[in-house]
Image (cartoon, rainbow, N blue to C red; front, side, top):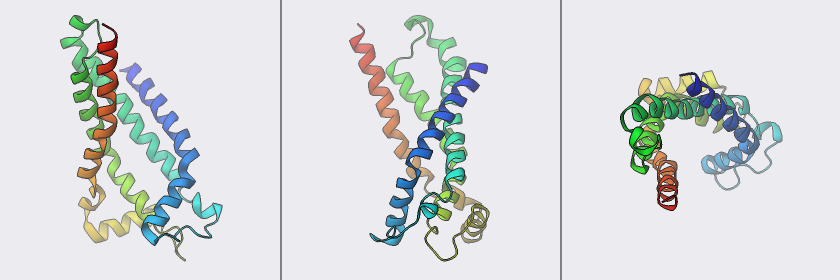
Length: 178
């Protein structure tokens, strides 16, 4: 399992650095989506970077599990059963299944963090923006525990995009390598 932890750490750290780079742009997108086309007009750098630490932590957490679970499932489930016939390489279909299963698990773990992040980021430009704990309290009051998984089904469907990309890359490598 140690390689899975290393894979998770590498994936988590890389995603954290990427999130820090694009976070202000995401803030502009969220402000425009929740407050109209002028939602980000006049926003200060402090407003656009509000919550960056939380977002980076959330990105690390999701990617740690996504990358770590993928490698663990590959090593513990796939390779012992099917690896010998393909020289240890997963078939494109197996890569699709492993990616979808591990992505769905990682999204389930991550959903509460994402919902809280969206809630408090959507209040960034308001006179009294919410903090992460306040946002969590509002979500719980409005929807109970289920509120922390709002949008989870859509997130699973959205997870198909990178899963299909990995599947197609694996398929192309498999076909081009012959």
